[in-house]
Image (cartoon, rainbow, N blue to C red; front, side):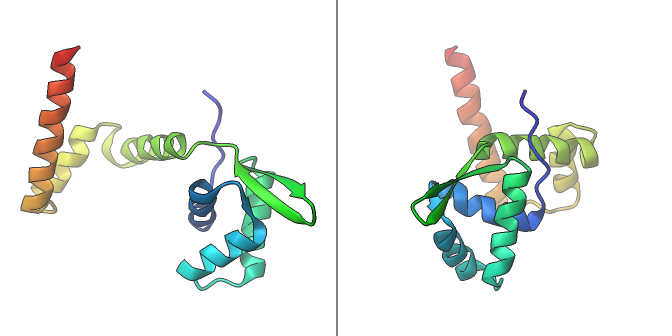
Length: 129
């Protein structure tokens, strides 16, 4: 599997915009990130530069404008971060995490109902294979 670069939380905010709108220009990234987070344009441009250096983004010049596209897929990044989170806090098992939420009363009735529904749907898919 291709090594996915380490991305800070701040860089992740920029990546989310690129993933959603790519290909996207510097100006568009600054505009969209600024709507969500009170960062100066230079800060956002610095994040873009870091992400290019980390090989999370690629850039090309289109006329006088720089356009960014991702080099890593959002679902792969989320999958890797999820596995790392489970490993770091719950010995790598989803069961341990869910049990922790249940034992600490952190799941609402709606959460439990949604989990049950997802599990039943998954069970139905598995039965059709």
